[in-house]
Image 1 (spheres, rainbow, N blue to C red):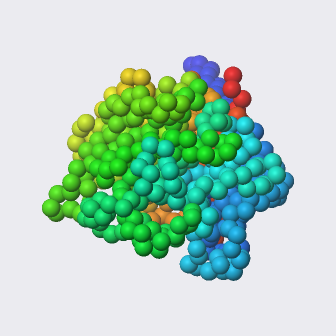
Image 2: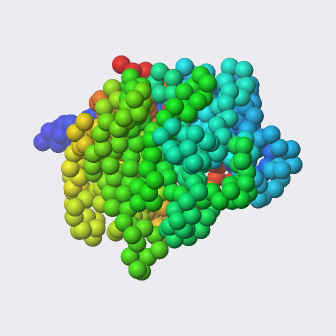
Image 3: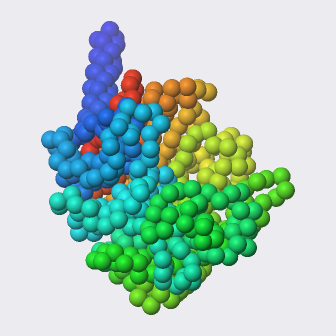
Length: 508
């Protein structure tokens, strides 16, 4: 009997040892898998500037990913880095004025625009880079990346614009830049206005926007703004897309609307054959008596033929953004018939937040309390608001939307002093999606923990993860060959900005 008991105890002991071995092996495998999935940056570049108050605003990767470009609103140059060596190999002149104008001053003069939708735009052959600027000579500057020479300065004021009254002077205010796939054209989103000699138009414009802010910019192209006023030219509300050919930089086409109730605010989108260009037109209606801002009623997509100048279509679309101030900074997926953009998301959302409406048709409180299943990675209809959806895909042929879910649960912040941010980017070849998450301390924005996950877009499998107690910024970029991913960071303890460059898994 005693021997039987001993045998049973021994069997249990052996079984326990076996279970322990299996458990340890599983944990080791899990740890090994986590380590295998962890990716480390291939390079780090310091983005400090002579003016301690000035910080980097824009970054880009050259087409082959070997160079990192960066610029700030007040810098004298756009810097081109060999990021593997962490050294500047080229400087593109941005500010001709004396260095003292900006260095060391907390209130510096802006020479580069970097608001929503603006970026450093590279030509398809990688030989040119363009940026929206604020300088005496114009609104857009283009450089040759091979020798650093200035290729073109697009003036802020232009006469004889195709399709406009000859008495009207075109005021170009750069909102976004796109190169056509064949490199023949450069399109500029125009967000300000023009001038004509009809005082009635100017009076109407003043009533709408509350002032003549278009008169105060100070850019010149044959006429100063003082001369415009002396000759009784008045600003009118106009927005549109200017098409420049890239050999002589002549303005070939200008597609526009002269109406404060219709505003173009999207990145100009060329078709894959570079024959047409599209943009999002936002509609508005007069404000209610209790509000000062106009209310936005919806949006349409307008497409034009570049050669003939004819409008090919204008069709209604689902609400693509909350308002023109948000805009649609879309990017084509391979094939060009679908485009994507990030909704952007931060926690906690407000009940009336447009991004919340993207997620659910249920009440916000019900959404927080109800148990919900894990969603599929993409969906045509959104009814699951317990997960974050930061990517939207639009089919240009059907007008239908679908949403890509990064499998991030819509959880509440750990404490009332924390705020969570989610955003994402898809690689140009459509093979990978990079999902970003950041948790910030509301009282100290530099105190943050961040992570990026790289997923395969076909299998949705996680292929790499990087996390750190630093602050990731929302200006991530891919090289056009989809080999490299770069994004800027801020260190937790001081205001030192850098860029991290990662190599993506090869497309299988």
